[in-house]
Length: 170
Image (cartoon, rainbow, N blue to C red; front, side, top):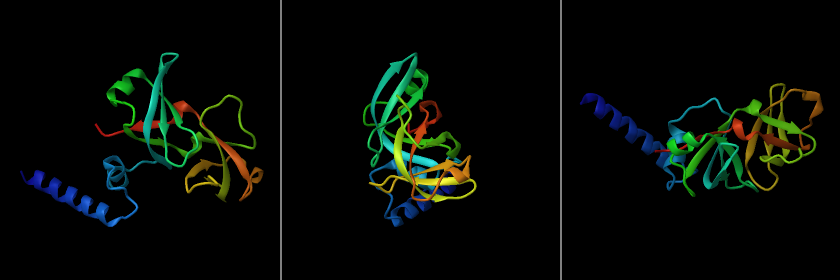
């Protein structure tokens, strides 16, 4: 019983912190929970809503609308994962992918989903912060050849469908 009260006290404390942060949308339980509870090594974390699902080569490709992105992110998961996550149209999901999975190129790749034109906002020997010109959305990418890129340069990023992790609340 004492453990239950301790859990309730910690939950109440988290809720109080959520109410104090004006940047957290109070109509999104997933966003609030993830911001204050979930810790991940994935530098790229976005929230969106399922737009559609389709089966391609025995995999479930999920299109997720992320506010501020010009096109949905496409995520490839197993059909069992889709069922376990109970994915339906408009369900809120969290997308996560690590910085090494964001690939930078000077030109767009042919016939590839999940690629966007961005500007290099900052750059150091380990990573680049990349930003959309039209929004505040930022991506973090691991840099392989530092001397190839410059701050302010427009580049293209690409994320493989299989490299994106989906999470949602039950």
